[in-house]
Image 1 (cartoon, helix red, strand yellow):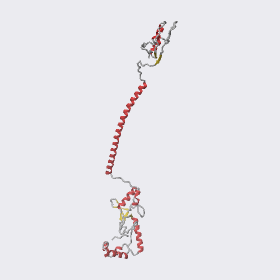
Image 2 (cartoon, one colour; image 1 turned 135 degrees about the vertical axis):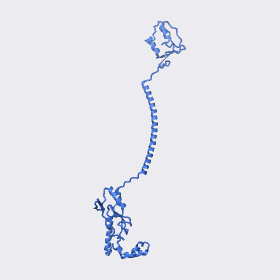
Image 3 (cartoon, rainbow, N blue to C red; image 1 turned 90 degrees about the vertical axis):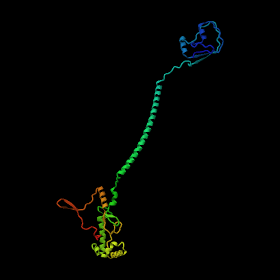
Image 4 (cartoon, one colour; image 1 turned 180 degrees about the horizontal axis):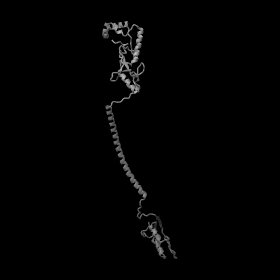
Length: 321
C-alpha cells in the first residue's frame, strides 16, 4: 500500500514521497514554516516502490546545503511499513498436478465404491438363489431315495461266520450237510450224529434187557392193545393198560442230545436248513460232500442212479408198524 499522510489531503497514489520532500529538491530558498501537525506517513512495499526505485536509484532524499539556517519542522510523524496488498486483485493460482491427481483418484474411489455396492447386492441375490437351489436339490434327493427304496428291495450283507452256530451240529460242531429235525423239541443234528446217539441208547438198553428185540416188538403186542393205542389219549383205562405192558416189556427211551426231551417218533430231514448250509458253504468256498452213485448203461447213454437202501436208517430204533 503506498505511503499516505494522515491529513485531510492525501498525496497522490503514484508519488513515492510527500510533497514536502519534492519541494526541498527543487529549490534552495527558504520555505515557509508549516504548522505543526500530527501527520502519519505510511510506507508500503508495493509495486510503486519498484517504480520509484527506477527514478531514484539511491532511494535517498538529498538536499543541497543551505547557507541560511532553516527552521526545523516540528511535527510528530509515525511511519508504518505494511506488506498489505489488499487493494490489488489476487492473481489466480493454477492447481498443481498433485491436486489434480488426488481429485482424479477420489473420483475413481467413489466410482469403485458404487461398483462395490452393486456387486455386494448381486452377490447377496446370487447367494439366496444358491440356497434355494440347494434346498430343492436336497428335496429331490430325498424323493429319489424314497422311490428307490420302493422299487428295489434292500440288499443285505450277512457275514457267514455269524451263522456258524445255526448251521453247525451241536454234537460234532461241523456243518450239517444232511440235517435231521426231532419233532418233539425241534432241534436239528447231523444224520450220522443223531443215529450214533440213538445207537448208544439202544445198546445200553439191550445190555440191560437181553430179551429185547426191536423187530419183534410190534408183533409181540396183543392185538386188542394195538387197536386201542390210537385212542390212549382219550381213555384213561387204555393208558393204564399200556403203562402196565411197558413195565412188563420195557422199551428204549430215546431223547434229544440237547434238551433231553423223550423222542417217540422218527427224525425228519430238514430241507430248509440243508439249503441254507449249502449257500453259506458256497460263499465260504466249500463244496458239499456227494453221496456215492452208480452208473448204468441202457444203450442210449449213461445215467447216474443214487443208491437207495431198502430199509430206513431209523428202522432199528423206530420199527415200522
